[in-house]
Length: 239
Image (spheres, rainbow, N blue to C red):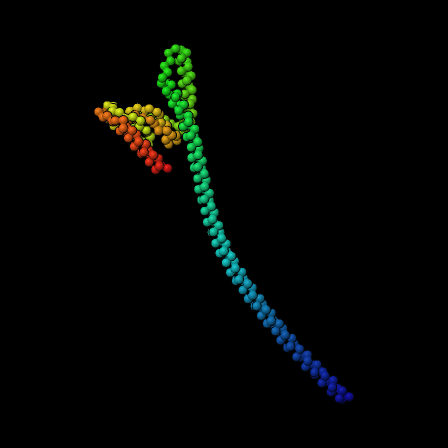
């Protein structure tokens, strides 16, 4: 009996000893868990920070690339816009030139008819009432023709009393004159015309040699050739 009691006491002490040691072990385990959690949290924060830095760096690089692409596209747009504007102006200029050429060709074919109207007007001298009525009708038709030419930008030259200019005039005759100085136009033999400020047809004129001078026919032809040569050279320079 005594031995059993002793064993019971020992067992009880052992149990008490076990119970006394258990809270310490639990506290140590909790601390370790907390430390592990803190380490894990720190690692997670470090990983997140690194990923954020990488993301920012990638975004900066992408932004720089997009800015370069934007600048390149902008420059291409400016060049294309300038090329298109030049093309549009060139097309407009070519169309205007083509229109002027067509109008010039058509009106040049009509001008001899205008010349005939003017010659007939100078020669006709209506006396009877019937002839005067016919003359008025003729004058009305002539005015309509002149008005059409004006609408197309055609204007006649006024040359008598002007100094001879091979760019505008073609000298057919030269003669002495007491009324005009040398190289001034005495008479208009065929009217010249402008089209939109450009020479449509040169005026055929008679030029003064000044008072008391007389040129031979060879010298007249020489002056005419020289005038034609000067006109061609000036035309080449204009082109």
